[in-house]
Image (cartoon, rainbow, N blue to C red):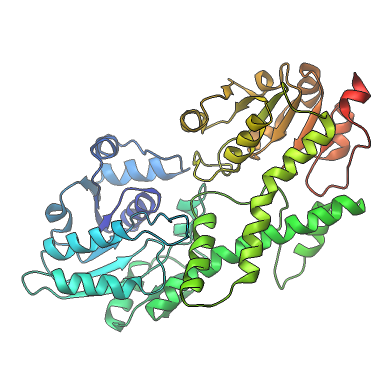
Length: 443
């Protein structure tokens, strides 16, 4: 049985710790937040991630996982120390490595023996070299350290599945024995394994996420053309997705990308390129298109309702994606901000994220369900495509509204079915423009 320490009980750290424990390793999770430690010791997971609470509780009960705030205790007998701390970005896009530096220094000062340090956090090119320098300079008692890059490719809402069923496992480093040792930790998982130098591993995460963002922004640009051409972008994406050269994933036009990864990693890639004097006009365009999408939704609403001053607008979904309660760079934040700037009263419902959202958007009226959101509203905007929103009684929703207007920013609904339910419907790139203002048509 391998002994693994994981530093950081954030999203990546929790999933990494629980999954390695489930694969049979003994895991110590090191975390400095006392409230988070107390919750984890009770078997309570502080994030919403399907399958994670059950996995955590099972391995905790079987003694394969524990939590501590003490590096000496957490690293005692460890063979591997995974750094899974946050790397927030500044406005410039520069990733802040203070938590990585601090973790590396603490590991070096408290390790009880030789150790392989594994960087799981998303970090810019050259960070593995930096951590190697830190652990070498601060190491005590003559212990040897090897540092390896092992980026994660987890999707929120599917992270446990992705860890256990990865599309690829990437391990980068200059010490082949250390690289092989980290690769063996994943021995029970059937997946392509790619070993490389650490800089290639580091850049692969940024390149992967930036390419996903590029696909989304490309489809949003195509959606604008579709709207002006009377074409449905959903059908265009379906046709494109059948091409085996690139497939269907991340070809959905809509409100754009948010969350904790894509925005930060796109900014980080631009910063890295800029610092090396490498121009990135394509990536900058990808970012610019994404920044425009919330305004596009508001423009559609204005065209349908005229002035938004004094209007009540209902928001369906607040988290940055379905299956998650994460509000980091959620598109709802921008949409609500724009609506409030136009003098709207905003009502909202989300299955999981309302407690967090209320701290970020205190003027919003939070409702118990979607029908309460619809009641008396002048329009609805579908922001996050939760599964439960597909099952709504749309005739009932329309009957509760002052004006039955829906701007579907995720293209969740069928335009013809929405029209039959009594809605004036606008998607993104659906070619379904309404020729007159709704207030003129119904009032």
